[in-house]
Length: 378
Image 1 (cartoon, rainbow, N blue to C red):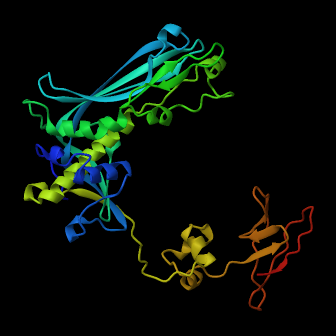
Image 2: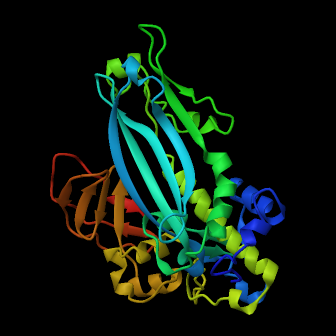
Image 3: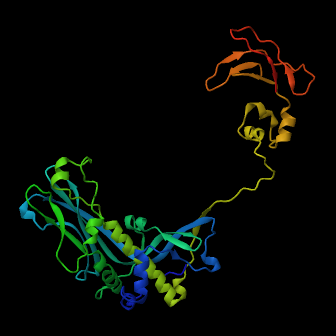
């Protein structure tokens, strides 16, 4: 696979989100367009299966933290408090520059309209990582969720002198998209509290609606007071934002390799192939009921041994005499009633006395309450 293990310094400046390759990567990330390898011979996985391996590529060493606070959603003093937000920022005042993603959302509300506000923070620095990837044909599917939950870092690529251009590039690409904030608005008495977009030109109000929990409705599992006065709950947007950031980084690493075409950006992968193959049988099959019964291990055909085809099975098993009338069957000296759980009544084994092919004479059974005609054609 041709993919860079790190983003060269200054690459994001030349190819930022509003220009050239930056635009292409942004569009591909948000439209979830397919990632593909080259169509050359050694870049493909057989089309009747999948190849799964680890790709060494540019990514982000990341770690996260979670905290929570409480908020009274009916307290006028809490007007304009943040209910939902997402923000990206860079801190260059520590050992190395760090990109921060902070999301804030109401994750729970009790019957008194006291909300639990969850704050999730991800810290990121440039790194070379292992991305689990699956290849089908020439299409690449990277397992972004596993990277978020358990990143595997090969080496950090941070520059302690100034702001990392890779982090600056990610900030410029994603802050205008994911910068959002919804605040508490208290309408007239008796009306439910609601979320209003913060008044700022640089804020995107779309995500507060996108991640709102729409299950807070009459008749739902939520308390009546919550539904009536404070139906303000959200799902976490964190993995969604992180997925776009890591996916964009993976695409950027592939774009770097495609643009620069240097040998160090070409890597060989050890991948596990899983596929489906059609089995070739050494014999013809007819799907005869006899073959099917033999394959399922019917005792009456057990003596046929390894025979699989209809004629050899019958040649080995020979003739079995049966008699059937209405709902009862005589076979191997026993009488069975038809249907699941039918009764069993002992009877002498049918005897072969007729000379006509296909006809048998059945010896009389012991007397029982129902008369059972014992002459049958099979």
